Amino acid sequence: MSRPSKASSSMHAGDLGQTALSKGDTVSALERGIAVLRCFSRTDRVLSNTELSERTGIPKPTVTRLAATLVSLGLLRQNAATESFELAAGVVSMAQAFLSGLDVRARARPHMQTLADLTGGTVLLAVRDGLEMVLIEVSRPRMSMISSTLDVGSRVPLPNSALGRAYLAGVDERERAQLIETLHLSRGSEWPRLLPGLDSALAEAGRCGYAGSFGEWHREIGSLATPIQGPNGEVMALNCGGPAFAFNAEKLHGEVAKPLLATAASIAQDIGGGLPLSQSLQRRTP
Image (tube, rainbow, N blue to C red; front, side, top):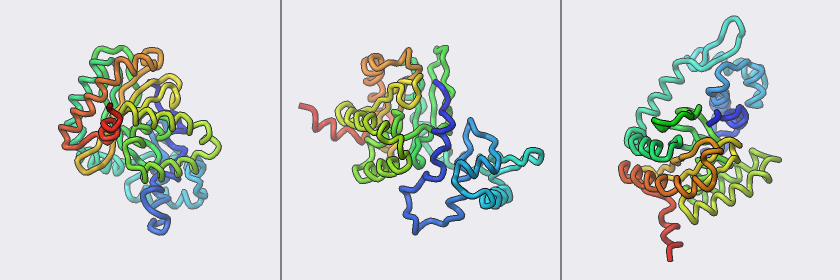
């Protein structure tokens, strides 16, 4: 699999999280500081003031002050020679605290590895962060010569990735409508191109229990994903796929879909969760 594009990992830094709180509830300086931190990714590890300003839409003088504050807090560090910035150890410690609290990763890992070895695909588990899905666990087939560059912390977009589509299918109607409206506003002129594929994938999820992306997020990747509900009601998504030449629609529907759904059911049982789409599927069963 190819790594996520720069656009998919950073273009929505200023929009992430808008569905969680109304503007009246947010602290502007904090919101802007977090937007700066979200600009960094595996492919954008070092960024200048100018780049941070362009990606967040925040004026450069304000970015300079925000970055200085983040440096003083140990969340960013600055290269004295280039005056560019990169994430510091403080961010890593917070990420580790978050990941260590996800017992679901340890419980899901053996099931994910079995699925990866069975199908030859890369298996991903992800949660939503703003308008993207962020990977919290990755399993690769032991015998495959093709390795994905996606790893824990990588991000994929909601509207055209299998993970994002499965997540949208798994949440309640109100949250789904809010997210789709936010995506519409965020994507602007792109939206008419993205909406038909999203609508089709959501309909497929209602019929089959999984959503697909066949070269729509990345032309070289084909995958299926299904939502899983955690013990506290939180929704995540489980994905299996690989290079499009090996994981075309026929293979995914014929060889991957059934074990993917079985794996999701096993994980849900182990974590004390459930399958959000199971009731709609039961209603469709003759």
